Length: 168
Image (tube, rainbow, N blue to C red; front, top):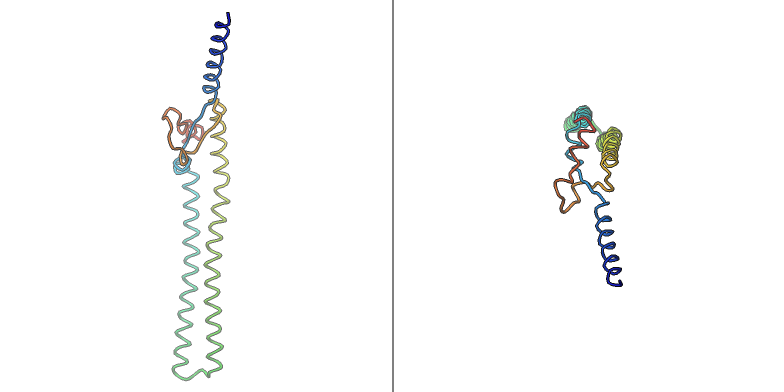
């Protein structure tokens, strides 16, 4: 009788462990690949590229204006039209222009990054919501991004389900 009880307890423990192991379902996605296929991301990148070109054109105009002003000051200094005090004043103006260009370049990078973050936020929310929906629909407890998984069975790849949820 004791032997039957021991075997029964052992079998219950084995089945309990198997059920616990099977109860946890995992999936993974490659969010980078999903984002690359989304039309919203492609539109965002096109918008950012257009803004960047516009800002670069403005910056290039500022550089050209600085170069022209520098050449004009050099020419006036060489012909003797500027006194030493005037040369100092003109040099200060050129330094100020150069500082303005440097500030513009920093502001341009910041503006592009802020715009990218602002436009990307709702896209990421949409992808995260699709991942959450797929997890709930398929009773998955965890979904990992492929970038951090060292091994995964292809059957656990839920990327196609997420893409379908997003209409891709």
